[in-house]
Length: 293
Image (tube, rainbow, N blue to C red):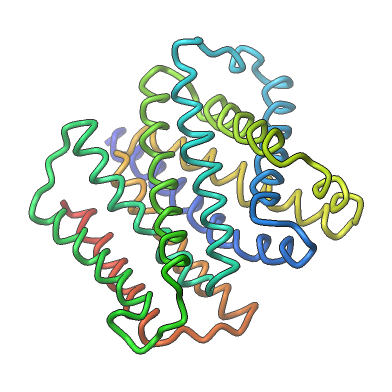
């Protein structure tokens, strides 16, 4: 009974994380309209998240800031291989296509998680899991216009969207390694975004960020992006990984593309074509099959 309650709590945390991630595109587009590049937005997200978590840990549990040098590769994985790469790809995709299309391509992540888990953790690729992968592939083909009438996406956009899915999957993989080494969600999330922030600042500087932060409206968007759609969902998702397998967590978080599609319709008047709708349904069917696998 206790295990079921823990599992239900973990699932609720991951579902809420997915909803908060689903509204991410609203902040990304608004900040893009303020003159920030996709890489700038990655920097905003990482800097605000790292700063907020540092203050939180200093005030509540300074011991959580301690990590063993031999475990740093876990945080380099979540920070560089996942957050920097995934965010850059996703924020670029949001600028190149509808929120729904970007979110559907992002949610090839469960397929990547299953493949990587098979290679790294020895999880078997059953027929049900292979069927889930096939549905995900067909869903992506549909949303990109291959199976429907919609032909608005470019090959570059498709690759960027799939890159976002791979990067997103890597957070689950490296996060599992960090949790297995005894680290808690705040520690993992803090070092993930600290490393990501350092990478972005060293690579591109902070001049545009400082200029944008001088505008009250842009500053409010930056804080909302960092707190509402970054710190909160990543903490919730990492907490969920304590009681859920990586594959199941990534599956439950599939509420994100549905949220993104609904907000795209509500705020931007996006009218998803047949290909996008069919692709969304196929991807979600694949995710459902993966949950049963």
